[in-house]
Length: 85
Image 1 (cartoon, rainbow, N blue to C red):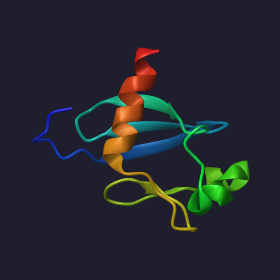
Image 2: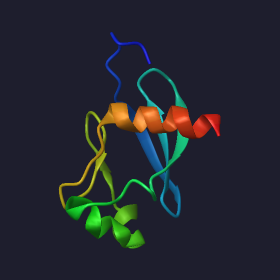
Image 3: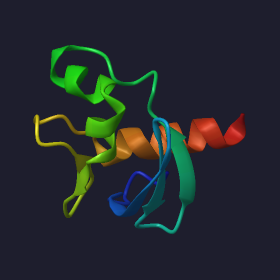
């Protein structure tokens, strides 16, 4: 990721389990598995897969009604790292 590039999630689609297909503003498209990323109090409701599926997308990233969200830069990093595996 270039430091001068402002990354945001431009599209997000639920795939299965804790996987979401994300498209970023620079064109990168990747399926990100968030199952190991949902820990801590704010993310606890996401342990319910039906709740997890009901994310929404704003101008920058994805989030849930409980207030949980992920920074787009973090999701981008996950996408790049998981793509390499």
